[in-house]
Length: 301
Ligand code: HEM
Image 1 (cartoon, rainbow, N blue to C red):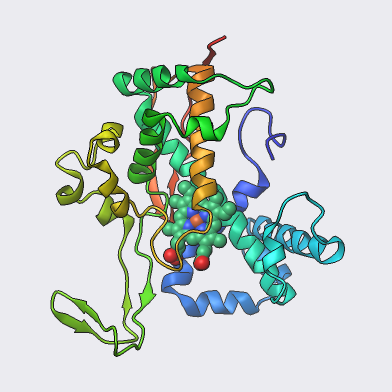
Image 2 (cartoon, rainbow, N blue to C red):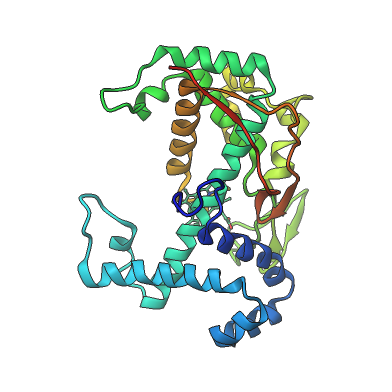
């Protein structure tokens, strides 16, 4: 993917995400249209919108991954997701593969964009982060070890604050109230009938001043370093909560920790003088307008 374009991060893979993301609200609010599209053959769909061919290519890619496992089994030295999906039909395996590809890419990228956007203009935060990273060194293979990075409190605080303010999935996540008389859903003293669709959002939770204080909308990693900061963890719902919460949350947190650690240890990063903040749009995941965030890199070594 990185090799596809020399000067930009454009790739068919990411274009497929853009098209799929834009279709999310159509399928939410116009389920009949999205059901109709499911019935149409791929060739016809492509003639409606040529960009859809990248989504179909992504689906094909997911199918190839699932079929590769079917034919060869696990060819790696570690467990893979398909080991746990053996009860599913081939179509279901393809959809699960697609789910993981889509769920894990833009969300993590969006969180890192938020981190860069907030850390670079705030000199005191940037300097404190760079300073905190002096506690560790690259290993003999030039890598930063995750378990060592996780011991750097200020980096961990920056990661948590990026997950909070970046809220890569900002909107409401619907749930159906179960029919369980032993544990009815009571809100403000009123019983919500079973079958009702209810939802809450990371957006309302993460900007609630009663929880985070008057600076709820500011990027302030230090809020995670106070003596009673542990209690804030329960209000961080970037990955949702409960049985359907994100299965990739540990991978995502590790990725953000490693990338921030690596970037701020290896480079002097700065925003160009004519920098303009990209616009944000809630397309189920939080997307930033093109061309994204341009950053000046200067090697530390
Ligand atoms: C910062 C990065 C990420 C964020 C903010 C995020 C957020 C979320 C949220 C809020 C949900 C719940 C959706 C709902 O309740 O309807 C979810 C589900 C999911 N996420 Fe993530 N995610 C991230 C990274 C990842 C990664 C790296 C993977 C895979 C490697 C992943 C795989 C999944 C899957 C498969 C689900 C569906 C789980 C289910 O329905 O049981 N996510 N994610």
